[in-house]
Length: 100
Image 1 (cartoon, rainbow, N blue to C red):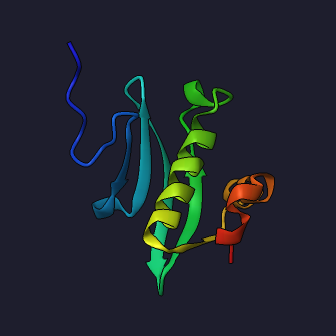
Image 2: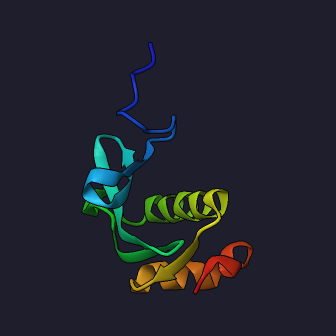
C-alpha cells in the first residue's frame, strides 16, 4: 500500500513549502531543505541543510537537482548565497545557465 504524499509533494518527496520559504525533500521521515527568497524571477538560495542521518547519502544533491529543475520549469534563475548551492551549480554544467 502506498502512503499519501504531504500536500504539494511529488512522489519522490520533494515539495515547495511556500509558507516556510523553503524547498523540502523528505526521505525516511527526515527533511532536507533549501531556504529561499523569490525576487524578480530569481530564486535566492540562502541555506541548504540535510539532517545528519541523511548526510553523505546524496539527499542534498537530489534536493538541489529538484530546485534547479523547478527553476528551469518556471523560467527562473538561481542566485546561490549558500556555499553548498553555489558549489552544486558549478559542478552541474547542465544547470550552470541558471546561476546569476
